[in-house]
Image 1 (cartoon, one colour):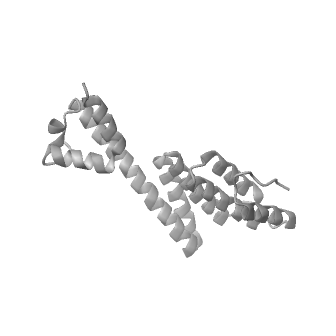
Image 2: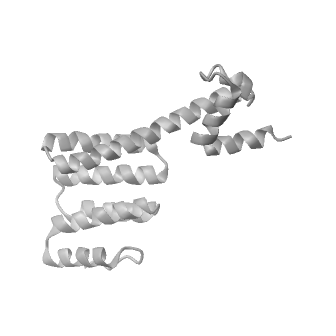
Image 3: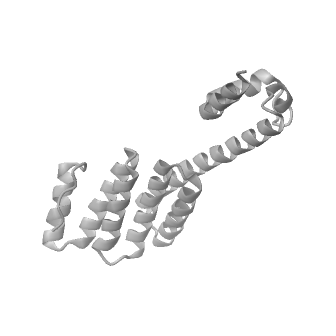
Amino acid sequence: MSAPSPSSPPSFDGASVCYEAAGDWRKKADVENNLAVLHAEAGRVEQAMEHVALALGSCPADEEVAAQVEDTRAIIALAAGDAGLAVDFAYSSVTRLRRLDNADLLVRSAQTLVRAGRAYHAELEEARLRAVLVACEWNLKRAARPLGFNSREALTNHIMRKFPRLDAERRNRTVT
């Protein structure tokens, strides 16, 4: 029997232990997968990965378990700040679940794929903004037109609203 982890909800840990004792490996895998999601959403990436490993090791992996774990790995990748990897895992999960015709799980995986896609798009846009700003020596007036903004103010507002890290970097570079 596995010991409860110190930062997991007691009811989930208890369920995991009970399912393991009963030999219901599929339910144990589901509980461990749910624990991984909870840890990922709380920003505890390492603990989430531990529970994903337990979920995968709890039962013979069928397509549904693999799809659920891939969706969870996408959520973990988002928590770790790797949107590209999250897109890969989420897409794989959606592809598997479409073949299995499991609408409930498919909807959840599709939502994760959308979240991952948005995060990846934001990463790409931030990289594009940074590249143009560097090329224009962080001069917003010169960077506005190549980035498709009508004015320096519009670009400033966009950066401030959507990319606070880039805005802070810009402010630090313009201070003499």
